[in-house]
Image (tube, rainbow, N blue to C red; front, side):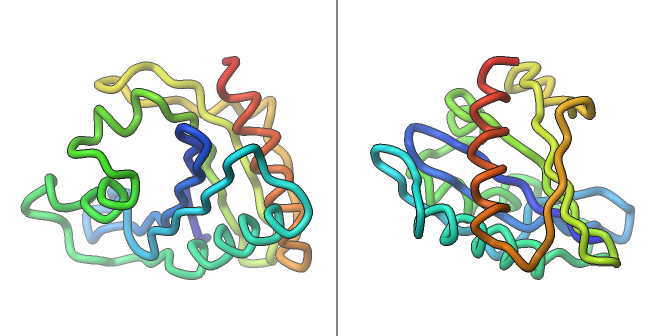
Length: 152
């Protein structure tokens, strides 16, 4: 199963792959992608976001080396967002998890923020599915769920 995360922060969407270490810990991995959306996403913008999500899912791996220095793990995402710390990044962010099964079904799940130190928790009752064949629908569902995550 492949895994990615999508964040919405101050009018931008930040997407990254999630890979699993040799210790079975999920970590942020590349690619890390930013989709800028001043004024919202429509039409081609939804397709662009969906394509970025699919690209990130393709970067998800298992068995990557377990980090020694955890501060280096989110560096690419923080750089894209122009912030210096993970706490500063998540302070204004909403998030969804995206999983792709071996059969190609994509599940998008909004996350409820518990605060910068506590992290977040999935809200399975709001989970939706899509297929890889329609990136625009994947992007549209991501935008919808990120809006809902902001209200959780």
